[in-house]
Image (spheres, rainbow, N blue to C red):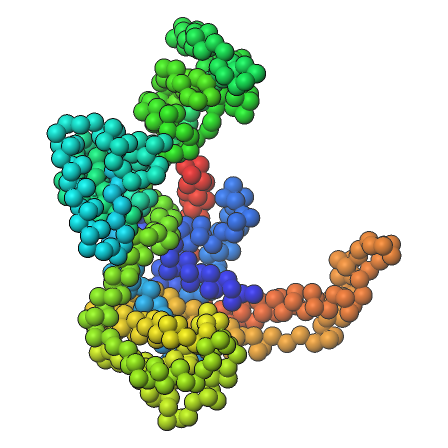
Length: 586
């Protein structure tokens, strides 16, 4: 119950980073440990469940959350002063956490964060580019490479002589979509395309064609940058759509008549008639006509390029010329342009998106490979072959009793080595048992080597992090301290407070008799009261929570007499105002 609350607080302390400004007003002071107003806002906002909206927040909610933070802080102060952090169980937990956390923290620090910053800066712009693809396999034969590079320079020479890029693309590109898009990749921003292509485009100017091949997994590319512009988040737009008048065979009957009708609508708009009124009267788009033609907010790429390219070129309040598409004619209007947000929330969303992307995975793979090379990672093939003799390659690891198939003397056999360590048979067994994914693997040589390599790589990254003195990093130390605080509070709750919470059968019976009306129900048997046996678990939980609070309040009361606590509750009104303002901005 409350354990979950406390660990939620830990995560909020560590990870929540929305900012309401730099003002450092003190909301509470717990014997020198301060809770600042802006930090409290951030933590409270991060603690809200999906069901709770900011509009529903009251001062009572804020007081209860502040009380929770104060109790948490008091418990931490008490636990640290009594040396609970040095207890064997907490130290064991901390060491396990550090081993796992250092890996993710270090990788974020070395790989993710620099790349995130690059992507974030690049995403302030979007590019439009066209390309010509020359096929070249990932692992080509020599003659394939020679042929591809010769073709690249022949095409490049034609382009440098002034031939039209589109015509050359249609004639020479190996991209199967060239007949539809004429080589146009359209608008994109960072993280959308393969990294080598993106890097090339972001290093070029509009109108420029790369003079050396851009190599990707698809082959060689000749790229022409056709546009660059600052990105916007979205535009609120509308259209009036007049569909083509078709005959029974699906052919357009009178295109000139339709075009003149559209021009007549445009003339009405120029004369000051309302766009929304004309859309409702004339637009053939059933989905938007009733809303005055409004799409709502549109992000780049949601509409077909013929409309998308125009909408994102219009200014707020501007109306387009008629645009012909396969289905008919469109007149577009942009009502509002939403600028690109510069927020920590967007960075967090971008971080998750990056981790799923090809570019980040390739950076991570390179980092792993370089680290293994630096630490001289080597597989011991003889001992791998020995390991294989213990298994049937058609039976998954989960079917084996791994503790019984090796002699004690065999557990220290080294399956792989690296500077500063090794992966032994014992390490291999432990990882199989701890990692559920591994347990489903079959013990083929390839799978075994992959598992050993992954184990070794984690150890190597850990050693690399320690050699880079990652434990002295302020952010790391803060995260670790938050985790330690959570363990201290958990230990106090579970080992000192909860044992004092005693619920007897008599307590349950008394509660049932005093609150019998709460258990009145109507079912197929008619109106009745639930029996004591039916509600025992529910009552037990209610009483556990109530008595825990009594025990906790007694404990906190003693701590408040030991540690001075000053609370500026009047400032919670400012918190409430700030949260409401934040909600309106969102």
